[in-house]
Length: 104
Image (cartoon, rainbow, N blue to C red; front, top):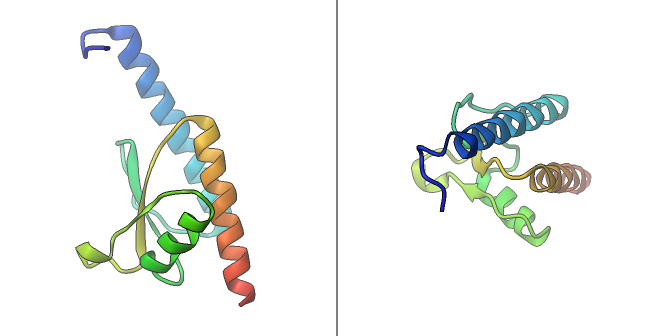
């Protein structure tokens, strides 16, 4: 297990999160979705149709997000920055969910 004094591990992890945030923010900007800025490995996204509904629809796509309803933020979900392939999977799923939902 890596420790915080493992400089290479910490450096690689910070780069992974920074690159992941950059990718996700760019993609969300392209979709016109607002998000709360962060320096951590998770953040909140304002979604149409409500966080609970997006949670349910994303779950059907095999992607787990967290609805922020229980925190009084009904229009938000929380996601974690993942590996590049996980971030790409999230973006693909949110695009599909938003596209499918807007047609209904």
